[in-house]
Every structure is written in C-alpha cells, then in structure tokens.
Length: 189
Image (cartoon, rainbow, N blue to C red):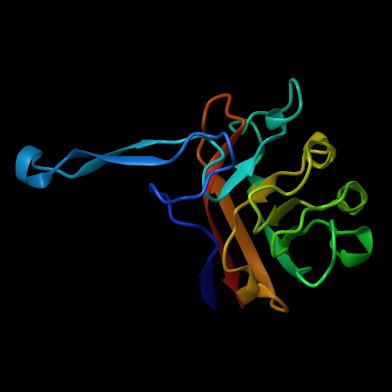
C-alpha cells in the first residue's frame, strides 16, 4: 500500500485563477518571541488544490459544510486525456465509472458539456482535474447541479494511471462556503 499526495503547496507562489485573491502566508508568532510558532493564512476558498461545492455556481446550492462527507471519499479511476485535441469529449470517458471518483489528467484541456453530461448520467461520486478549472461555467453548472463535487488543481495524477486506489479529498468545514482547499490523497493497493 502506498499514498500518493495529490495536493499542491500553499504559499505565495501558489497559482491562482485570474482575478482570485493571491495566497498569503505571513508569520504571526515565532518561538523566540512568543514561545510558539504560527502563521496567518489569507486566500480564497478556491486556492491551490480545492473542491467546489454546488453553491459555487448554483443559486441556493449546497454549501461545502453541508455536502455529505461520503462525496469526498471513494474508489477512484485516473484517465489520461492529454493526447486529445480541444475539449475533452464523451468518447474519452470510459463507461464503467458508476459511483467512482473520476480524475482527469488533462495537460490543460477542459471538459466539454457533453462529457460533463456523460459523467452525470454515469452517476459518478466526484470528478477532478489537474487544471485550474474543469471547464466553462456551463460545465460547472451541469456537474454541481447534479451534486457532483469538482476537484481542481490536483497534482501527481500520472502516478495513478492504470492503478486501483481510494481517493480522499476532505474539505475544511467552512460555514456557508462555496468550496474549500483540500489535502487530496490516493491510497494505492
């Protein structure tokens, strides 16, 4: 059994979506001065590796603190779609994905509306990507209105291709949050 860390570092160099707040990690207390060490963190809910709750795009949708914890843990499948052109199409998504966490190694490609609809019809548990965004606003709305959490900015997905694994990506319990940073991992074997 091994653990693959799927989470990017949080710090001043963490990439953010254009227009989102930058990540700031500022020293707050030092052992020599205060007897303990602590930092202050300032960032948006969708910084670094994070998960989107339905409320991110759906008016009145579930906030991150209300999404069932079972949605954030499940048997995963990693799909390499880096070699395709344009948006990821439904033909690039396998059929045997029901109740799975589907992770897409995209190389920068985004999900098409048709592929998002296939994921919904396949009754998946959650979906994730190595990209800063899984796709358009419409793609987000299709997935989130079906109650499918969306993970973005995952790393190390190439280590999961062809392997069986358990995915865990628990969010912070942010009251009325539209999403949350996560520490995403895959337990392989």
